[in-house]
Image (cartoon, rainbow, N blue to C red):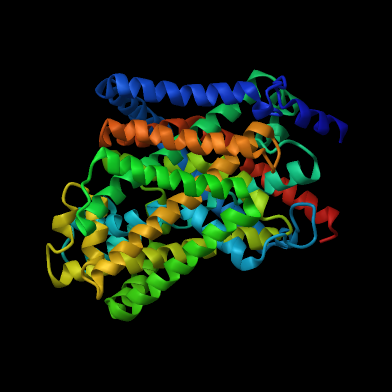
Length: 519
């Protein structure tokens, strides 16, 4: 397609002569980077003023778009399952007949990238939060085994089927077809090509679309990076007596930047793959240890009961609207956070899933990964609930004030060899965040060039700039990171509109490819 090839070379921007920026869409680069720098400058100037603006925008976003996001995620999941089980499930994606990456490595990268560091601290803290302050849907029961089951079920809703589905199931199909088979650039604007045609591929409209998506991902990644600095520093003080100071936090960030930037530079087939594999192996070992030496019976009982409750109350929880105050800071907050990652995560999924069928891709992302995630939450958070039920206050008291790392360390300390396990969990969290950092660094660089192999210098730049931004924000204190986390939800508003056309474009593309492949 000559037209499409022309789109790739232009990318909607003039090509700079600077080698570092060769092939880079300069307007997108400047707008997305400039907006983030402006956020940091304003936060450093007056964090209270910035927090006020962000909170106002946050409230407006959740009020106007919360219900839409709930419907969007629910439909994305259901349509994806429909495509996976029908004849379209056998469609091979990416323009090649066999996968480039082995199944284990592919699953490892997907699990690590999409679960991220939140899967450790939140796995420990969220079930406890819902246990001590029950979700409205489940009434006011607390302090009982049933309250523990309810808490886990609510956590499953936030980290389960719907959360995963939006991160590349339908959008991955669209990218696979339009980029690898039709030659369109690997940019968020490509998701809108079936609706707007060449109008979105050139000019200001496409530039704004790409910039909004990049800004959302950068904000969504800087937040966990900065958050990790704060949390690991807390853990090091508690475990090793190392002072929890800004110097310690920056040192942690420096180490993290080095890890994920080097991983991103080495590429999908090397560093990203190696880091993800190490992450999975360590996570599995910790899971096995807790299953053997932790509250084994409670873990299995609570997983089965809570997952059954999750399935039974799936639609009521997914469509719950009767308590906006609770909803905005739980379900809608998580939906906004995950939506912000949606387009770039889909690009990354497309990059690593070539040669896979629609059925393989959707079942892994929308079914298998959520089931594993829920089990992980049961092992970590369920253990905390078991310890709390046996000895009230042992986990909830350290967690007071929503202290996420304190909740994690309180759980690990109850296990045999608690100190060693605590250290290993801190290492695991660091690697989790690193696997998100390297994949998003890679994906942002792909947006800038429109190709799946952006230059190393560009990857280094984005890797460093996100770390530096995190260091600047934590210099303010936890308020800087908190403001950014609320800002993530605001950036999800335009991103969610970019994802909407995939609800009908993905099925159309899947049927077309099924016909082309004689299925």
